[in-house]
Image (cartoon, rainbow, N blue to C red; front, side, top):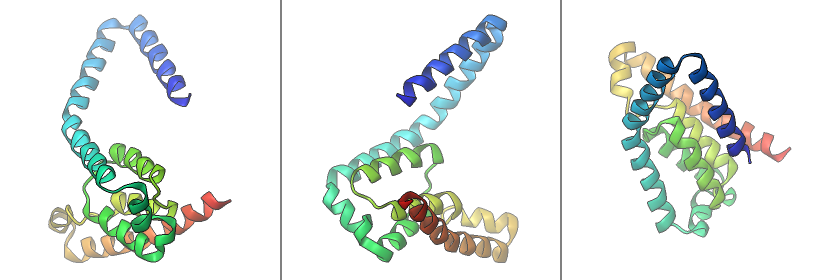
Length: 160
């Protein structure tokens, strides 16, 4: 239902924009379409990867590795995968929701998403180049540690 409301708001605001300045709205829509086209390969790749994982691993297996009962191992595994993966946020959140539906634990998914957003193993060489070795490693180590705090907080908040 929320999705329908958001689409209705977007269409309404687009109509208002078109009424004010048709040419500017057309340019904005074309710019948005081009931006979408540029992220489509990444989006498709990640969605296919998540679909493949969910096809190979049934909900019981997902639950065993990163479910509520996986405990600290599941949180650690999810945070390591999140730290290594290079997935944009707009793909990570739907993927996390799908994993939750298939038996993943809240704390584990919180660790995955927070490390995905804050830790950059793949981007570490670039970070070292611009910020220096010590700053890059310190930032990533602190971000990795913070992922566990964030995961614990999310699990606590969800349990309320």
